[in-house]
Amino acid sequence: MVQVGLTGGIGSGKSAVADLLAGHGAVIIDADLLAREAVLPGTDALARIVERFGPEVLTAEGELNRPALGEIVFADPRALADLEAITHPAIRKLATAREAEAGPDAVVVHVIPLLVEADQQGRFDTVVVVDVPEEVQEARVRARDGWTLEHVRARMAAQATRAERLAVADHVIDNSGDHDELVTRVARLWDALLSKSNQDHP
Image 1 (cartoon, helix red, strand yellow):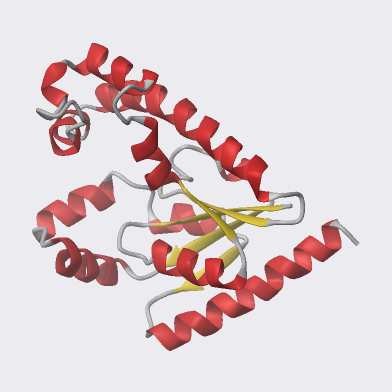
Image 2: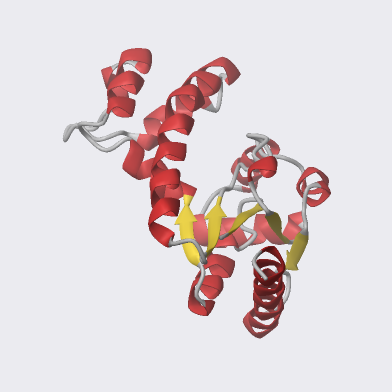
């Protein structure tokens, strides 16, 4: 098994790269999807979040109200640390279970937006960073989510810098071009991952 950590800043195109890798045969484990699963109604993590932040972070249906929780934690570093102390172990437990289901010869790609921030790069055989210039990030996120420029920049400022991500990269995917260019670059990456798999398991 080759364990790959895939990361990149908001708007960089991590999901597009993951989708292309899945098309080549990779097993994709998306931390954002697991983060939602980890706090579904009835989970221990959701109960602990309500205990820490109060019932106002729930919807009328008893689900996590992400915008309400986001307003609390993004304005308070201590609150964010408390939230991560609850959710990160639950997400890692789910990821470990998915990885075990993948089989011994799989290329498993963990899509983790905050890989660098959580200092998780050492967990993986290979770290892939999807990279675009900051002005491209800003334009894409504004077009996709309808956010103001100030909102986009605040979210970017809460993430690792571009330089910090590139510093831990074994492979960099430049996603500032068009889709055809991305397809070509991901195909090259896949060949490199298969080569690493063959070297690890001759």
